[in-house]
Length: 260
Ligand code: C2E
Ligand code: CA
Image (cartoon, rainbow, N blue to C red; front, side):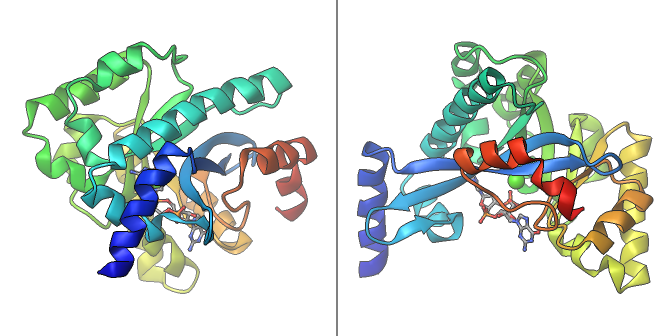
């Protein structure tokens, strides 16, 4: 309890002191291994404890009602960093940000996005599956429609572990679905799991939805996922999440080409 209270206080002062930053994990075309996108992931530069990952602060931030604020900080940093890579001539075709449920209930979300000069096709929102439980909420449905109007792609995160149904895929028509890493992990050893993954790819294909595999840890998984028809791969096999400066160096060196 006392520890949680302390972290809660630290989060609030951390927000004032701009301690929340974006790390980026690259995503690659499964066939060509060209970089197609980067996912922005929140990190907290804690003054005493050092760099913290979301498991250390996300749940408490949600209780404090500041998760939407963190999402917004990450969005602004991502947009600024896209401009940075453009200025350096580094090809980052797209970036995605994670979106918490509360932000989709925000009736001012779209007005806020319209003020931000977002180039169509450059940004994607990753929506956690469980969000669709609330799809009856007209504000959520309207926001999702409007995102597409603005040229912001919609992706379904952690697909296969939550509540997204075929019907909700049809209704939502996302550009991409991301297969959860729990479903990716066993595919090289378990034929039944491989079949399951192939079926998800087929569902995506039949609806014109691109399929992204996350948590790809080995090159063996990477080639199998390519053969199963996945379009995009993300995971430690290629690159871990990294700071903007580290990503600059990674892109300049084309570092993943040597590994893969
Ligand atoms: P996620 O959206 O499923 O993000 C992928 C997580 O998997 C990241 O953890 C990433 O570091 C990790 N990962 C990437 N490749 C591999 C791999 O090959 N193997 C394994 N085992 N893990 C891999 P991270 O950065 O700790 O983020 C955890 C979760 O926190 C994210 O899961 C996302 O749901 C949430 N999150 C992160 N940033 C934000 C944010 O800005 N806003 C919101 N609302 N949620 C965020
Ligand atoms: Ca995600």
